[in-house]
Image (cartoon, rainbow, N blue to C red; front, side):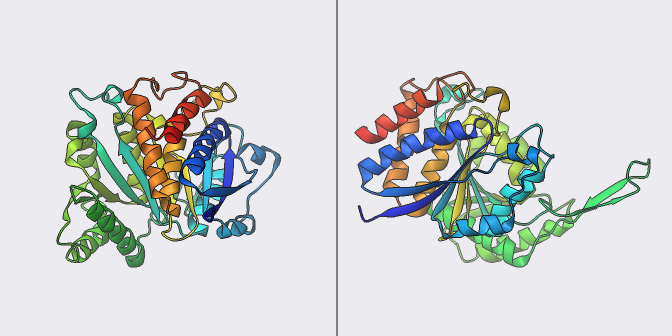
Length: 352
């Protein structure tokens, strides 16, 4: 096997290690069928360790730069200092490695998962390209008159020309590869005038992609149309804050957070792949969490490192699991975590 990839595995908290193990089970099957291998390194970082004073520093993150990809389970523990593990680990990885693309497919795997009346798999196939390093996320805050009736807190919402142009261009390139070749910018440029930079960049870059139809809408309208007419959307490009929100809405219309996968990507460099659900501590150790999001994240990782046939096989296996009824759902308890993974792995191996 000449194709070898170095993968760092951060199981994290709660159900994170369980769904990550499920993803690795499917990775084993993909390796056997498609003739590549991975060298895996376990990284023992979690929010739970923050209850003892542990911190992940940028110096600890830096060695991961030499890996091909990072597979992350979930970060979050109820007893950890609120927001601190996320700032250190999640934002540490995203900003430390300049992972400027947050890629979140919104895919309806089976008609029965959709809560919208009369909608089917052909109606919901969206990819959200969320800018991942700018906006207000992870910025320092300032506090005045804390604890008094006059308390005020504020932070900066930052968009740069460089950051805006590269995410818009990535979205155009992605839209060009899809059958519909349609791109929608989602912003709030009427109320947040600083987001006009997205409108201007969209039109300027769009002239280089005459084969891609593009338009723009405000985030409140987008939230409405995603529910009323999800078939309207193909590729969405949006800001960090709005992307976080509308992708959870998107997950709801395809069955829940358990379906959702994401990639934190810098093309050609080490990138992080994870399910979008949280650590769900109440289900820890029960083996009932859905691994679909984690396995979907594995497919994104395989595509990123260049194993595109393997990525497509994993995606097909997830779809087949739902269409055959072997995967009952994505809510906790709808199936045993490793049973679902084993079924998907078997389909990958058999090539059906």
